[in-house]
Length: 480
Image 1 (tube, rainbow, N blue to C red):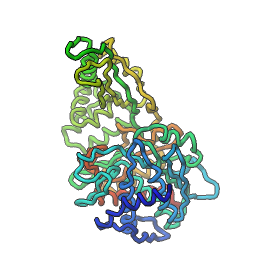
Image 2 (cartoon, helix red, strand yellow):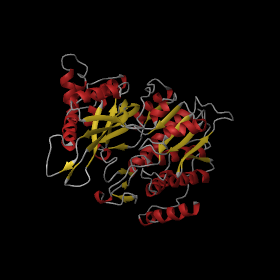
Image 3 (tube, one colour):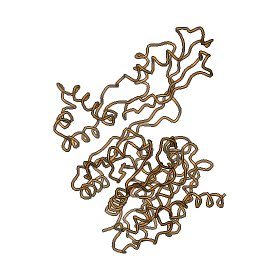
C-alpha cells in the first residue's frame, strides 16, 4: 500500500519542476535565538502547499491517508515524531508535538489545526487543473489553495521553524491535521476526539475560520473567529400521487415542492445580536465608508434598527448571515422519467443557525409559512452543535490582536462570528479557547472563490500568513 501511495504521489508532483517550483528546496536555516520566517522557509512551504493540492482529497471519499503520510514524512525528516490516527479506513489524522517539559500540561498547550480534505471541483468550470497546483500571475491555483491546505502548510512551517530554532517553549505546541471537516461525518474531528482526545488535548487552538480582507493592496481589517453558526441540513419532502404525465393533477408533488421552496427562499428569519456580532460591526463601522458605517452604528437603535438591518443585509450577504438564521436551498430531486408524475419530490436546505437558536423553532416557523399538508421537513444526520464563544479576554486573543494590528499597519482586529462551520466548534465544546485566524490577506473577490471555481491564493499573501502565524505562536508559546 505504501509503495502504491509513493508511486501515485511522485506521478502527481512531477509537473511542479516544470513550473519552476523546486521539489526538494534546501531547508531553511533558523537562528537559535529567533524563529522569524525566512525566504527559504517560504519556498519550502510553497512546495508543501503545491504537493498537498496535488494529492486529491476530495470529500467524499476524502482519501486523507495519502495526504497524512505525506505530512508525516515531512515531520519525520525534521526530527518531529508524527503519529497517524486512523479515524476510518483510508482516513487518518496526523498529530505531532513539541514539548515544553517532560510532563505535559494540556490546559496550557497550543493546538495548530488544519484539515486535509477539500470539497469537489467541476473541472469543466476551471481554467486550470483543480489539482495541478498551477502557478500563474503570482498566484497558486487549486482546490484547497484557500480551504484549507494553505493553513496546513503554514502550520507545518510554524512547527518546523520552532523545531529548527530549538525554541525554548513555555507550553506544548501540537500540530493536528484532521479529516472529514467538509462533511462533518463519521471521520470528522468529533470521532477523532472520541477516540484519541488525550493525543492532542489543549487549552488553546488556532484554526481556520477568520479572514483578513485586503482592498487596493492594504488590509482593511482582521476578523478573528471566536464563534460560528451551526450547520443543519434539512430535507423538504413533498408527496403526491404518481401517474401518467399526460393527465396532470393539482396535487403534483413537484408543484407543491416548488411552491414550498419559493416561499422558503423569500423568508428572512428574525435578527438576533450577540456580543461578538455587536463588537464586529462596531469595529467595522470605523473603517467603512460614511454611509454604511452610519447604518452599522444604528443596528441596535430602536427607531432606525430595522431599516439599518435591511441596508446592511442588502450590502453584503455575509453580514446578513451573521445577523440571523440563514436558509439556502441547495439540492433538488424528483422523478424517474419525463412522462411520469413522481409520487415524491425532495429539496435539501442547508441551514446555519445562530448559536443559541434551535432548529425546532425555525422549522415551526417554516411549517406555518409553507402551510401545505403535502409537505414535511426532515432533519438530516450529523447536524452541528452550538458551542460556547471563545473568550475575548484570553492571553491568546490578546497576542493575536497585538501581532495582527502591528503586522497589518494598525488595521482593526475584530471578533468574528463566521457563517461557516469549522472544527473549532468541537474544540470549544471541550473547553478549548479556539480562534479562527486564517492569516492570509485576501480580497473579497478571491474569498468568493472558496468552494468555487479557480480557487487561488497569492504567493505573497501565503508568505505573509506564515510570517504572521509564526510570530503569533512565538509570542504566545516561546519563553521570553
